[in-house]
Image (cartoon, rainbow, N blue to C red; front, side):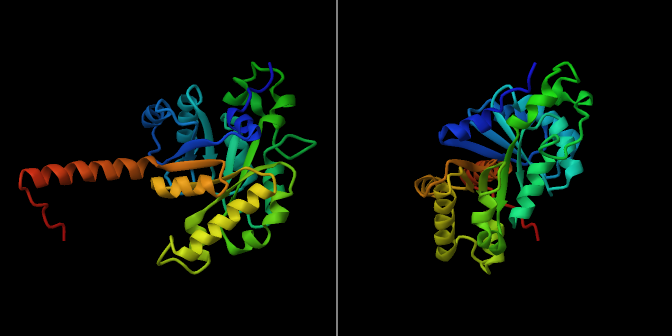
Length: 264
């Protein structure tokens, strides 16, 4: 049997828009709950959430039956890319892609020779159902999906060259890091940054690549789609959960006249 069809990549290439969610809870039980909530895709964050390979693997297993999983790695190391792909990931978001050279290296790490350098050891991993899908090795390359993260001034300067790299399937704007790199660390949502994000989404779309980004309120998410984004994360599980819990505790403490203790 061949490698399974990558539903996220297929949706990207169809031109359809989609809504996903960032995941930082690092737990398969929570991941399955979110996966059954109706999102088109979920991103397992391995850069800023305390995820390791074992946790990522367990989350992939419970997400995949319900929606498309994406994994963001902390870096573009070929050894880590190889392990995550063998664990069953097909779509990767690679942070801090600042040049065409960075993009080409990520493409190569995700593909078997002669197109790349991925080690041919899939028989030990769940990607090939532990070797029971004999055609996995000769069909896997076509299902790999690389999303490059654009989050620096250097990446903006090299954006056209990055998008032209064969094997780059989409580009995702990292608005917070981009704002920090451009000097807006005290106001990540400054009007100047909103203008930069709007222009960059348009540039990516004009280059014929799907553009992605994350938003944390309805106004921002709607604006991103209007400005050319094809796939948008509607917040993050940890933030949504924390906000809901704070709202519930505050509302009921107010209703019973219970002041919050001074935490110092």
